Image: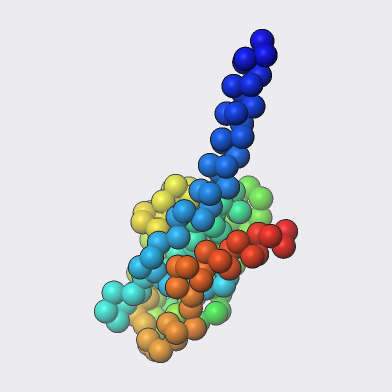
Length: 155
């Protein structure tokens, strides 16, 4: 009996450590990050936007994503949609200014892609960037990781 408890204690300890590190291990190096927890991947004069793994982890299971209209303008730091989860509804802000070229229609029927694949299949919009100079206002991966650690320490 004692050996089972020891094993369970070690397993629980290991799982806590794994879960803690998981939140920070999925910050991708080739992206830029906003302090409102959106990421952007710039490809030429267009950009792909989504919410970070850190954000989706704090939201819990996403059940609905409010998508904007293609062609609509977006401004850096302004809202363009929302993510509704079992815990809360959160606005999605654009990390760049421009015009929406495409929305991820797959999220209408599979909003959980934001949870399972936040940086790939769970992207939200593609934007034609109007001011690439705005990218300097965003964080690099290492800055964003530190930002998340400090933010979580406050809570």
